[in-house]
Image (cartoon, rainbow, N blue to C red; front, side, top):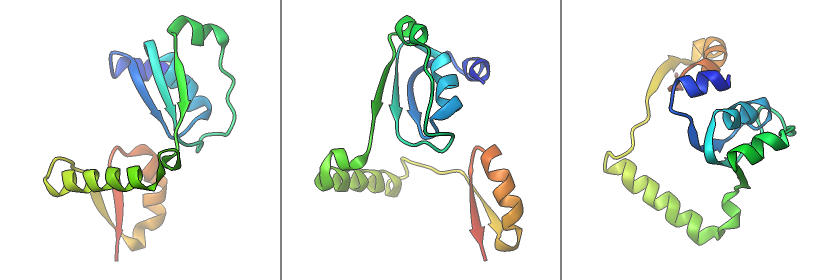
Length: 121
């Protein structure tokens, strides 16, 4: 997996990690020197074994993130900024409408798509 990440990019400088587990390890292995991983979620596993040599050779940094660390005012302002950008057309989200009757197919396809699947009645 790390070879695929590196092949699709010039390596990672910043990793926003919602998965943890083997996914985070592969992303770090594709990291550039001084890569920074922001740990947000653990969908691929709650535990990970990181080789010490990998961390030292990259000078990698791992930090945890939860919005509550910054308080409700900062969270509110961040969402306001995000919605302002969306309203101004500065943010786009690629999506595909999928009939609700095809929910089973959508559930199977979701992990393999690069866009959002939107269930519609």
